[in-house]
Image 1 (cartoon, rainbow, N blue to C red):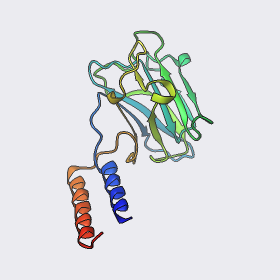
Image 2 (cartoon, rainbow, N blue to C red):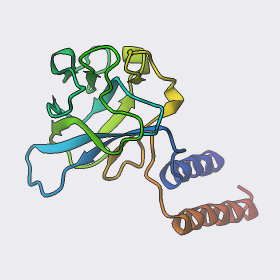
Image 3 (tube, one colour):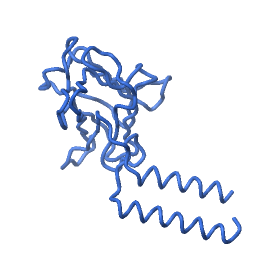
Length: 198
């Protein structure tokens, strides 16, 4: 039983402490500053490395009630995009976002761009959890699509929500000294447990 507990602790340390591998396409929901509620806005931002133009983003989310596309982004097809506030019975307590370009070949985020505003989520929550961004692979057949709406491989994107996105796809990176300290603390606890015959 104690070994199972230690294994779970180790996995928890890895999830919280280690940053996700860098991906060419990074999508983040970031809580907008200076809000007092009861409804909070979260900017949906995308950063894209050169050569990875994005034409559509399909996400499953938690913790939101509405989404408004960025009408100032010339590539977004407002009428071709939709937010579903309830994916029940398929996924209870989850929402779905399909954010499309307005025509084939048009990018909503060009390669080499950083923190492009795709739109704004709204909801009652101020942290992750309960706010999460999840991939759309199962629900929509892909998460990120090129300008011709061909799905990009899942490994090309990283998803996260800030603040406190320790459990989402792209875990928040802890500075290296803190990471090393957590690993050393875990190894010390493991050595103590072994000496006690666990």
